[in-house]
Image 1 (cartoon, rainbow over the protein chains, first blue to last red):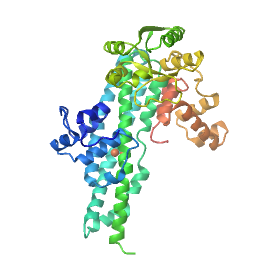
Image 2: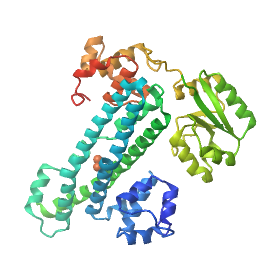
Image 3: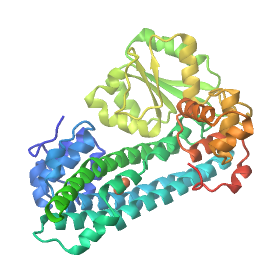
Image 4: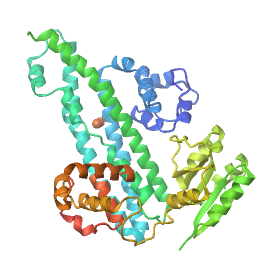
Length: 245
Length: 204
Ligand SMILES: [Fe+2]
Ligand SMILES: [Fe+2]
């Protein structure tokens, strides 16, 4: 089902409670009574069309009207992506770390195995940090510069220098699949780890891993299916308009 | 050893009895509760301390139970019961699926696998999921050798190593080297200390 601006915000969460984290990133807090998506967005000063695109893309993997989303300013997209990165590092990763730590503490019989999981996730955490850091340091600033040049009558020379050494397709090619290791971790816990003593803890951890994996999936989809094509078009147009031969 | 506890949520009397007899056959298990309808289900989820809940898909499809099921899945492992072998249930976090048309031995094997009842602690040797040859290759991957090095060590072509790797990944559902390494350690194919020299960034 497609979410529209007249649907109650509360119903969006009823439909799929994972959307809570999307709301969170837009700075929208609970307690919106029966207000519609549009009204809540207005209250929080959020572009409701952009919100709808993101939340629909999140809820429904097949729903992806790229055309619509493509009309938004690049900054709106990168701000959202940036907030998602923060959400991973400040919230999700520490939550998972804590759960693994609790499992190490509570599971004497399998201490060695739990320590393995801990090390695995610790390595993963570093990998994720490198991944997002590179995007924030290199990719996002690049996209903003391209958009600026695209909107300008006479772009600064620096942008052409930049475009000689970097392009959005370089990012696309080096953008690695950051979900793979989470997928492995999940399977190890579900299928191969001898039955842990504390089932509740183990289930909670799995919940968190599923949750993060799904969120990362959605995040990468926005990077690769929205940001990349949008910037690629702009690059082409800039080259066509401002360089000769 | 504490027993693995089960609950069954199923409206059909006959299917419930069938499941009871199957669970009975697995050592160290205990059936704690049988739930016949929605009211019982809602009352049950409030104070569930049960390891696994086998639940008919009609309960999952019931919107009124959505919150309760979500809560349940946080405390217990959910095993879905369905008559349709193409059902996937991606919208709910579950540990496995039981198909009504399966034979007793398959259902038994399935439940044992899900609950880990056939994983004996401290067991060593070749895990049943993979062949002896694949176990050899997996061991070397976990030790940090490249495809080429493994080919030379085992006197086979690099191409063969690649094919084996693909099969291992497909069978185990594990794609990355660090993931495979953990699997190898858990199954005692290699010792944890052997991996000390490994640097996870030097190989793919
Ligand atoms: Fe990102
Ligand atoms: Fe990314």
